[in-house]
Length: 191
Image (tube, rainbow, N blue to C red; front, side, top):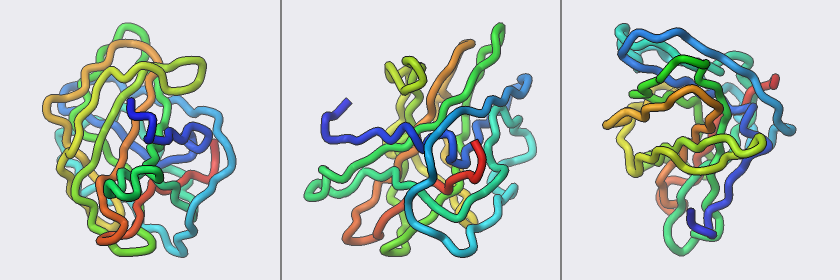
């Protein structure tokens, strides 16, 4: 992991994110502790669009409830601004006896200081290390996405295969500040 990248952990539990697959599985959810929301206010955050997720997908983990009015940055900036690169992560649990094949990650987000669009997204999964992201177990850099009303759907190919345990998922926009501004996850109002 680059020493220039800043991982934001305290706000992770407050981000809106969903993990989905195309194979049958039992849904699992887990809330987690986090800090106070920070970031930029969005006066009317967009509602989640189900149009991005085809009907054959099964939701494994979903924190799209209790949408807040702030967003928290998670962005890979241009080289001249590498010192400001940051990465937001959210923890979740794959229940005992299950293996998840995550094929799509949805995250509610917004642009500010510009209107985007992001070039692509980096998606990473980490093991849990005492309530913080630990070892990276999957990454897909420069992943393509679709976006409708602030709902960003990022396809993973190949999928991330996760056995039982606690993990962290990170979604980071690849976007030059000089061209598109900033991007971040929409925060949740509850932990």
